[in-house]
Image (cartoon, rainbow, N blue to C red):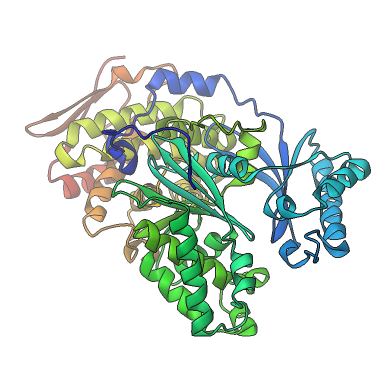
Length: 545
């Protein structure tokens, strides 16, 4: 049964999270002060996770926007296949687990890690000799291996998986090899948590789904999964709820689905897979034997034997909850442990940071890591972009102002990499980098705006993607010009000059700008493009300092 933590607060809408309409960035002075204070990173932390299908170790840096992976190691263990008739792991399973821990400890030492957290999940919970493994890990390598409960695992998964996603209410399903942890949440607080015996490896082994399963076995696995979901009292989702999926099976399914269509974002974290795409994938995967499945582009060879079971569980989960799609979290248990290292009490709720704080943390992390020397330029440019946007847009286009503010900060990331191609470089980094707090659509709009600022047509992966609608391109071309105007104005201001010295207003003859540093020949190409897109000129005059 789902274990309740707290009751959902009714009447709270998440429109401020689902769209960029109500984004809120700190004011100019807050941005400047945060940058001037410098970046003091926390020491790295390491997490070892002994799971049912594999063992993993990550070395991470916890920062304001999320968790940055510094190193990762993975070893396939398949512990569910090494349980003897007495319910204990056999010698091969024990030796493999301890060998993995030894290798992970060496990696952690190589990164100078002094804080290490090691946990075991479903396979060790069910093993009668888990205590022996924990004793040996401590005796041989000095590692304290903690076998955590399913409830505690669900809580850590919630922290790691949902913290960086722009979601407020919904359900998290962390699909592992031996079990699936499910967490209900509202207002970014954990409501319920439970663990179900529905791991991808467990279902694949129990119903013979590993090698071209027949229709009867598939149907039996699907019915069994639906029955367990119903018995768990897992609720149906409401229209403003989001189904979030994490774990290796969800990652692989989303990867395979994404590569079948034009898509501008290269990162998987935050990708949404719809029910139809999942159904087609299940049919394709089930029709293959192991060798054929391994040849599917993008397939992880270590998951060929378990992915059908994972797809069956995922499909049954979408049907049971009524969700039309699932949003992938590329993070989970390990990232949650890195952020919350203490044991989680089973009778208290877990709260996550407001999504606006996560977004700001992401932008600040990017500035600190890529462009620390631009401590003033980015915030000044963002402040100017905000004022220009408010002058030229009203109604439904007002939300573009916040997008341009973000792009005005990210532009310095591109400058730090390659000034002459800074717009393109900044867009590329956005496409390849996880952006905690931002949806894929929001990140795609930011990247497209930067590319359009170059004056070129968007690549096909943007033009043909469902992330951007037909009307987006005109709006983003205007946004690109607002960004360029803010940049032209900012880079001519003397270092200590405040942006308040620039006046911006929309008059009957066009956009009227007075700035203390300007020349008649400045930004001629921009003026031409502005008239073409906005249907009116920019009237820029030189004012007083």
